[in-house]
Length: 159
Image 1 (cartoon, helix red, strand yellow):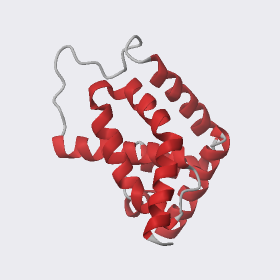
Image 2 (cartoon, one colour):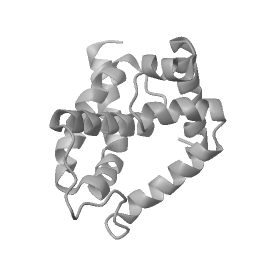
Image 3 (cartoon, helix red, strand yellow):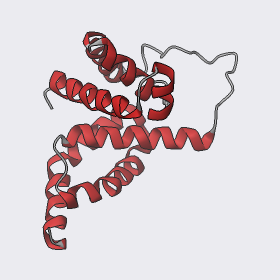
C-alpha cells in the first residue's frame, strides 16, 4: 500500500469515526477530550497504513484505554484522602455506568477460561507472562485465550 493510499485510509477512518470518538471521550474525560482524541488518531495511523483495522471502534477505544493507563502509570498511585471514594459517584457519569454494566454482563457470560485471562489483562493490568505464571499456562495459551475473549466481546457488542 502506497503512502497516498495510507493517507486516504486514515482520512476515511477519521471521517467515519472522529465524531463518535470525540463524543465518547467527552462523556468520560471532559477537558482532556481533544488531547486524548489527537493522540488516539496518531496511534491509529500505523494501523490504517497496514489495512489492519477490522473493528475501528474497538481499536480506538483500546488505544484510548492504553493512553489512560500510560498516563496513570506516569503519575503513580494517588493516596486516598478522607473524602475519596473507591466506588464511582452515581451522579457523575451515567453513560460510563451503562458501559460498565454492559461490560460486566459481557464478561460474566464469557467462558471461564477466557474470562480469567481477560480480567487479569484488562482489569488487573498484568502482562501475558504474569498471567501465564498465575494460571499455570503457557504464554501462547494466554495470547490465544485473549484473542478469543476479545472476539467474544466484539461479537457481543456487534462491532
